[in-house]
Amino acid sequence: DAKTTQPNSMESNEEEPVHLPCNHSTISGTDYIHWYRQLPSQGPEYVIHGLTSNVNNRMASLAIAEDRKSSTLILHRATLRDAAVYYCTVIAASKLTFGTGTRLQVTL
Amino acid sequence: NAGVTQTPKFRVLKTGQSMTLLCAQDMNHEYMYWYRQDPGMGLRLIHYSVGEGTTAKGEVPDGYNVSRLKKQNFLLGLESAAPSQTSVYFCASSYPPRGRRAFFGQGTRLTVV
Image (cartoon, rainbow over all chains, first blue to last red; front, side, top):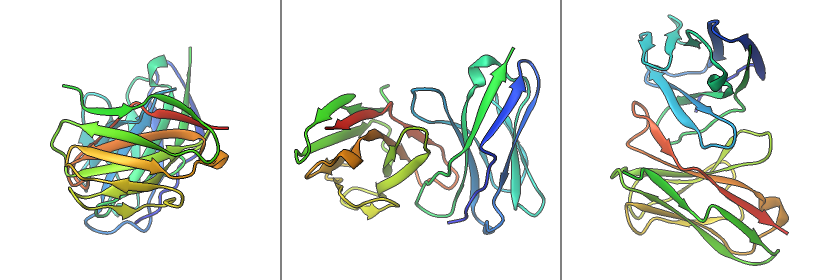
């Protein structure tokens, strides 16, 4: 499975956009990129996923580089409720594995 | 619509005791997973299953056994608990995961003393 690299932590001001990067340089052509987040004391929850094209949903946007070796999760207006650990994962076949993620801190 | 339910939510075990954690899903998902999460760490895959009657090892399988006798249930067993198995355990389920989202339970907090 492709390995992902994310910054350990990031900070954002409330109401500002946040760009969370992820590197996955060993990704294969048919591997999907998924993002999950884990709020404090909760189980992980799905955020968004994509293959090649950029994706939007009500929670976030996913921008995928043309060579697919990196992607960026975009929260358009961060709120205090978005403070969480964000995990980027690349799914090749049947295993869903996670790295250490990025801890996002949102301040007033 | 319960989603993924884990039982129990909390448990304290003595070293050497055994126990079984139950994960139940009502979404007819083929794939199910067990993870452990140590304080301040990410999720590590213990075992997973791609269908009823099948199981496979994940990243940290030692000390755990699993069974998937029914499609909706995935059991995680600790035969002889050790303090190193103190952790929060999460279960998840999904259709074939490449293009589909996974759903997670709320976790089981296990302490081994």
